[in-house]
Image 1 (cartoon, helix red, strand yellow):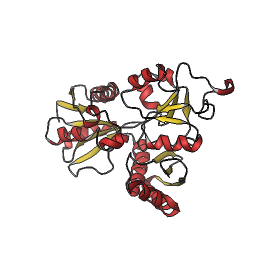
Image 2 (tube, rainbow, N blue to C red):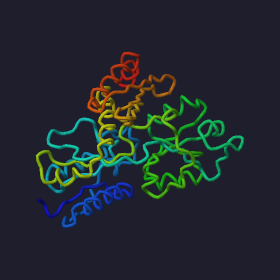
Image 3 (cartoon, rainbow, N blue to C red):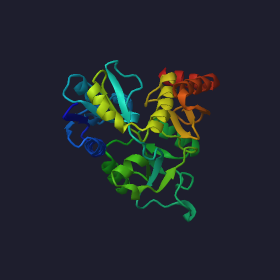
Image 4 (cartoon, rainbow, N blue to C red):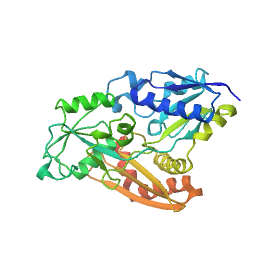
Length: 314
């Protein structure tokens, strides 16, 4: 059994917190194991252009995978939603940690006034409020809820985004609850958005640990961090996304829960303007996680999602 292990991580504050969470858990489970974190710069960290310009899926993971493949690191820690659905046959997802809150959060600016003094919500935002987001998924669903909203692209780490919000560059942001909680910014969550109004991204809130296929010692060490129900839910979600042939540049969302020994999976595909959303759900036994994802994708494709995806690609 190994006596040391190197974790590859992006250098952002959130990425390092997630890597440190994995490090602490590995050290708790294996007290004699020496664990180090090596920071790897990715394309997504270096480039400042919108994700639609620099390439979307893989821009936050490729260099981490390269370091894993050439032996500089033993594992890579990712936000699962950043990890492409198709991996090199030399790599595996050795563990998916227990999921944090998968929902999106509405985050209001310090001076943003809510209509009628009601509880914060998308419906209560001021008319033509300016929303910061760089996610096609969030943008399409928000436009579907409120066609009057104005959208501005948003990049940078969470603290940078919050600073821009508080400077008045935006009226509100939509960010992941999980990231805000892990960064101890839970107090900035004005309102969690239910999956009914904002279906999350595939894998949102889950941490994936990638390892080299065949590295049985490392896989054995890391495997103890795998959370069965999170893996089942995320397997269904990633199968759904894979079967659609989509990535983060397309308005696609998928979210599964495990309850009463069954998986319930929701999915949607939208056009970029949020004028048309094709949405459905499916449920089935735990041992059919992958099949449920592909079946739901087939349903959506048959009900018009294929046309939306083709229009986006063209």
